[in-house]
Image (cartoon, rainbow, N blue to C red):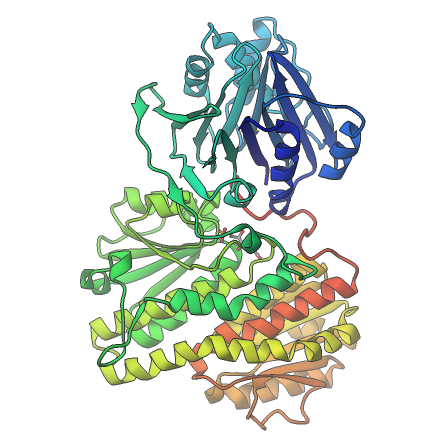
Amino acid sequence: MCGIVGYVGEEQATPVLLNALKKLEYRGYDSAGIAVLDSGRLTVRKAKGRLRVLEEKIATEVIRGHIGIGHTRWATHGEPSDVNSHPQTDVSGKIAVVHNGIIENYAKLKAWLESNGVEFRSETDTEVIAHLVNFNYNGDLLAAVIETIKKLEGSYAIGVICGNEPDRIVAARKDSPLVIGKGVHENLLASDVPALLEYTQDVYYLDDREIAVLYADRTEFYDDYGARREKQSVRVEWDISAAEKNGFEHFMRKEIHEQPAALANTLRTRIKTYAAKSINLEEIGFSPDWAKAGRVVITACGTAWHAGVVGKYVFEHFARVPVDVDIASEYRYREPILNPHDIFIIISQSGETADTLAAMRMAKTAGAKILAITNVVGSTLAREADLVMYTRAGPEIAVASTKAFTTQLVCLYLLAFQFGLLRGTISPERLETLIRELESLPDKAREILREESGIQRFAARQFNKDKVFFMGRLFDYAISLESALKLKEISYAHSEAFAAGELKHGPIALVDKGTLVVALCTQSALFDKMESNIKQVKARGASVLVLTYRDEERFNGSADAIFRIPRVPDELTPVLSVIPCQLFAYYCAIQRGHDPDKPRNLAKSVTVE
Ligand code: F6R
């Protein structure tokens, strides 16, 4: 997904812009560019490919100027090319624009501009914005941007500079994130916090339809009618080391290893330890009314949806409340039946996923109560939901989600346990036992990570398999879904997940000597069933890897290899069983020669459909 940066201040803008763009590389991109102003003269440099290509292109020239904007582009309109890269400029060559999002009415606007004599150079929707700003420009860039965004349909986060006003950047957003960094004698603009952390930890999260005007010594905020607004900055608790690799070769491995600390962070302050142990959700504003819900609807995409599948089993088991779990892109386009007593749990690491936000807004318009589980403070989801439970995983930079997933699970357990207590399906004594089990998860995750080399060795033997199937029942089925996704997105091995009971209803047709089957076996009541599934795939020549408890002897001898996890109640295994599968995906990607942090065709934050 595209990344925006902007700088105005005492430093030379070019190195700051390039450095900040590097921190946004994780979002995925196929070209990059910068525009810098020096005494009103605009210099624009762009290049297809990685940032390195842009850096090489400008290595021999000095681009001076204390104000500029930069962009990493992930192509949506027009192929990746130098000309389609951002910044895009207007006909006068004075105005430069960087843009994230999609302008849905761009064809209409383009036709109108062309009928007024404008010649387009690129295939981008963004070029329309540059020409419109020029068309509306009457000596005041802010007024021109306000007029321009009135005409735009779709989503946008934009940064605009103009040669006639070399002291300010105008930025605006709708349905695409934008953060302003408040520095000393400098101010910055970015799509995401990691780009700012080297310069400041004080940020302003721009709201939808809000406009920011950045000067070296201040930032002013306006609504989309041009009225001034006061805004408070927020201190980001992450520091720069949290957003960097800290000695790990890849962000993904670092983030897998951060899970024990992240899980402890998610639990921190949410458990009352005086007298009996209980759950404390006061911080999120949770009131007992929420637990009276007639139904819980969980909506999300990708990995977050897999957390939702676990959530369904957890809520139904512990709180005996009916749960529907929906993929957000399906939910928003069918005709879901909403009841006034439903509550919605919307899960999103980034809090910016377009389909997830659309589903949330549909539910909200219908009057439903929304509880968000997200990792990003100040994200659109966090701002629009009624209640927000932060996962507190710290920045997740690798495209493949790991620590965000396990911390989402812990949030769902905390909520389900509290629902159970309030609905009378969990006694205070059982709650205490369950809380102790939750509290043991960080240490147990640490134990699994200590056995990483075993998983690495197994991946070294199996990474070349044509097909990898993950199968399990109940909670193990949910983790099979997540494990298959992880493997395919970073190693590009063909991997699928299915409920083990479905084996005979189709998937077994594909099982042969070239197949690896990972059988997740942590649901004790169904061990017999899993054993017979394992026999069926082995009989067809598949290699089998079993994942089960450390002290479980049942599967000895029935598999080619066994990964073992510490024992927890069967309903809590997802938080642990996914960890070896994350590591397996990571090491398969490495063995296959792929960079796990930058999987092809994928972006970290999917802010368009
Ligand atoms: C997979 C992955 C994606 C995201 C999905 C939703 O590793 O990261 O499947 O889970 O795009 O993203 P968020 O959680 O930001 O809404």
